[in-house]
Length: 172
Image 1 (tube, rainbow, N blue to C red):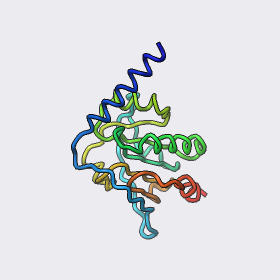
Image 2: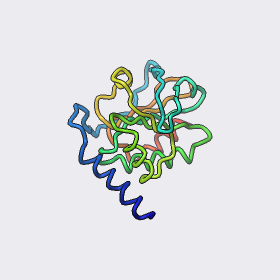
Image 3: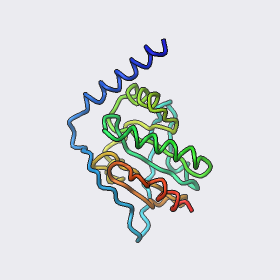
Image 4: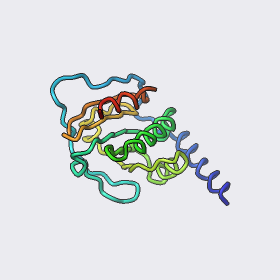
């Protein structure tokens, strides 16, 4: 029975990858940490999580927050989400990681989370305004928000191999 469930889940993931939408969102692997300068406040939002809870960014003030905008059809997303889960586990006392899925059904996101073993909150269906507010023109995009509410790190494209070292340096 376990093999059957795993096979169905894997089939769903493969179907989702094969049926990736032909949208303007493209993978552009160009990682760029946020340059020093004027603080860039993180726009507030409220999104539904995979388990139906409403998540308000403002409720997470006084904590470090990592946002990652993603989709299951991205070729590097399995590695990125696994790395983010490890980072979330290692820094659970100080950091909240939120995965914001762009354009996929809850069933696909749930199957992906099960197969990849992601436990941090996965949020669904951001609108175009939210994507624009966070400069999401391609996927993936990962940002780190300081307890003050300012964006202190952003990366366009797959995570750098040393992203955990970079973000740990920011935390300290």
